[in-house]
Image 1: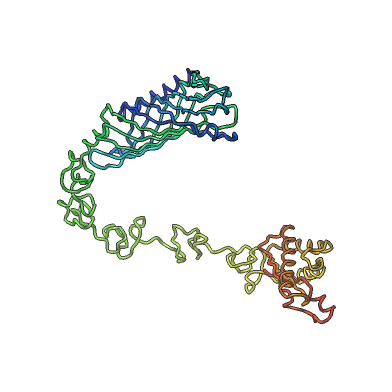
Image 2: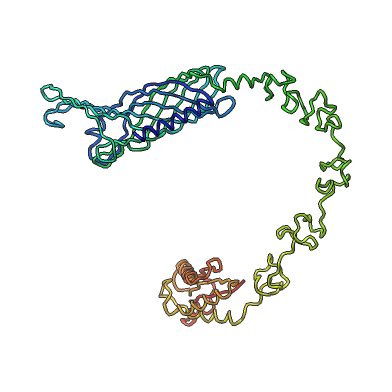
Amino acid sequence: MKKIYLLLSVNLLIFNIIYAQVKFGLGGGVHNSTVIEKNSLPNWKQQFGNYYTPYSGFHAGLFSEFALDKKANWAVQASLLYTTKGRNFARSYDSAKSFHSDTSSIISSWKLGYLELPVHLVYRIPLTSRVRFILGAGGYAGYNLTQKASYQYYNASGELTTYDNKLATGDNVHQYNKLDYGMNALAGFDFNDRIMLTANYNRSLSDFYKAEYSGSFRHQSYGATLVVWVTKSKSAKLKADAKDSDGDGVPDKIDKCNGENGTAATGGCPDTDGDGIPDMQDKCPDVAGISKLLGCPAPDKDNDGVSDEEDKCPDVAGSPRYDGCPVPDTDNDGINDEEDECPAIIGSSKYKGCPAPDTDMDGVNDDEDKCPLKPGKKEQNGCPDIEKDMIDNINKAARSILFDVNSDNIKSTSNASLDRIADILINNPEIKLDIEGHTDNTGAVRHNQILSGKRALAIKMYLVKKGVEPERLTASGFGSEHPIADNNTEAGRAKNRRVAFKVRY
């Protein structure tokens, strides 16, 4: 009962607020209600689902509406309704395949009654001066007041047995939830702001019943509603007060030039140039001006928005902040002093007027320096010469890398050499490495090229796993395209089966 009182109190508060601001009405209608049931029971649809039919119910109660704009085209509509919902079941049975004992037919129904609060956001589309098409959508909350199940059993002899059960509410099996919520929509017509006729759709998003088996039970209904507004909407009064015959946004009662399209600033009189001076008083009606010059603009030779009488640089476009003169640029770097963080030193916009930094002080700024943390040479884009010892160590390691025969699987004996290469690359983050795979001319050309590429890629992935950034590595397979020895001898072919590394910045 406490929940019922709380729901009623909330609804009465909402209705009082809405009633105080807009309009209030009475209405109701009829609907067909069904239950959308989903479960995993075998043959449920054949035995039961196909025999359910809609339950014809009704809804009635109080309606209110709060306009969101002056013309009341947009509004929030709320109602407090008593609504019946449920479904019917009817099926006849072959006496030899009776559902229960010698039952020949069953007729039953679920009937539930709710106190519901639907809330819609509605929009009206004017069709004529008195008729508007209305669309709306929103949600609802409901509280279960009554719940009843009735059954009629006919046996093979035609005898009738009836049951009427008041159903229990709660969270247990075979019980009904007190609270229900869902979505609803409407579409229809509003006549002269007095009568509203709509078609309605309503579907719950919560289960209202808990069965002994796993399943979902939700209400759905289609119907029609007639509402009679018993209080005149404030929107109608607003329309009368805001009557604007010439459509200039200035109500007739304060329009000094009713019948002519004007502006609020000029009391409803025309103002062609929009300077706030009515055309009938404006000596320059087509050019925005000032009242001091009877609607004509003050002279401004450089067109910088500062009149000549106030412009200290009347022949050069400038800024009002500098009395019509340009913003100064002391270092002439194209960035004015207001935005220049180094106003006395030539810089760039990227660094807010300051020069680009040169972290390693090698004469190559960081924007152009590929090795910004190591002093280098301009001809090498700021990078130093690559140390000969580093190249020798990498090449020595390369000669120790071996693969399984006709495979890209790296022999475990090569791991130490690859680890040394990874350490060199990690300790020299500016260095990049090109990995090249080569083979001799034994076997198919296409096979050799693919195999050499896979081997180069296997080395790259090994180094990446050791912590080297993948973007610093390239892997290429050249097959037998670039021999370094004679492929006609076994010694030469052995030299040609190799992995080569190229170090670069």
